[in-house]
Amino acid sequence: MIICRKCMTSTGFSALCRRQASRIPNKPRGVVDAFLDEQSKKENEWLTDDHIRALILNIVTGAYLGPLQDVRSLFLFLAHHPEVVRKIQREIDENIGERLPESKDRSSLPHAEATVMEILRLASNLSIPHQTNGDVNLDGFVVPKGCKVYSATFMFHHDPEVWGDPDAFRPQRFIDDTGRLVPSSHPLRQHYLPFGAGRRLCPGDNLTRVYMFLFVTTLLQKFDILPPVEHELLPLRIDSWEDKLSFEVKPHHLIFRKRK
Image (cartoon, rainbow, N blue to C red):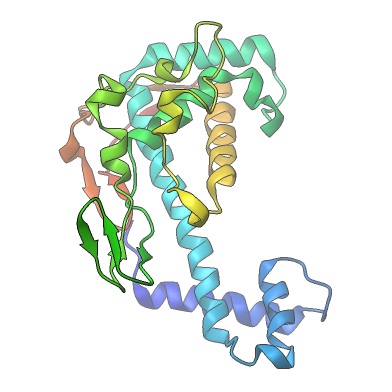
């Protein structure tokens, strides 16, 4: 997916113009209206249209582009692992039947939830940088003021001492002996940081997990994911992904066949 700066800026500008033209003061329909209300206050003269456009673009890139690439990666892994697909489908059939999956079903579909967690571990994106507001001495290393600091999520998620087989797609690692998702106190969960860490944890954490859960369960409820017939299935190798704005899987072919 290619995103040009001009297109992104145009998207933020047009969205802002639409809201400005149709909003009713102090009756916000969403986050943009809320910011426009704040902008109208005298003490918030610093809050410009550029700030609000940047907010719109952050929502588009963070809440859409990242999860989109994670879902595309997940489909490729599922095409290579039909046993995982069957396990999720069996779980769906037994627990919710024909009705559409809902966010409340996450606790009753632990294998689906574990599969989402596993792809977020394997396809870890570069974290949002922080900046030191003073010199920091960290185990003898001096990190100077103003330094950009990233949490090394890929290294956290691919440490063999923690994960054993970090390069393997194995959602079962997040399932305990009772068939439930391992608790947040479990050592693996303590080293699981797909959305960063600390007070600056990505605010889209839970929203992304819910979005991916619903996307995957709704699709697998109705379809099987199969390797292509007229093309080779893209292998699960590091060179099948490109390091761009997010960790993007290369273009490939899959078959989505309606379940019988």
